[in-house]
Length: 69
Image (tube, rainbow, N blue to C red):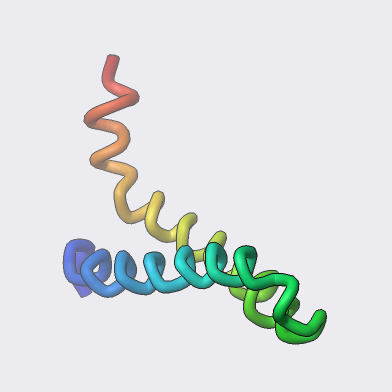
């Protein structure tokens, strides 16, 4: 699969996981400890992996814009 097509799939998934993190923090008092662990802690680990993949896929752009100077 081409990098741009993969990013078109990855970016909305990143958005969903990021919004999930914000919502679970806002409503942390309303969630049970187990639900918070699933929705915030586990999803946070997945978010970090997706973010790393996002950086890897965009590394050429980062290198051209920030590391060339």
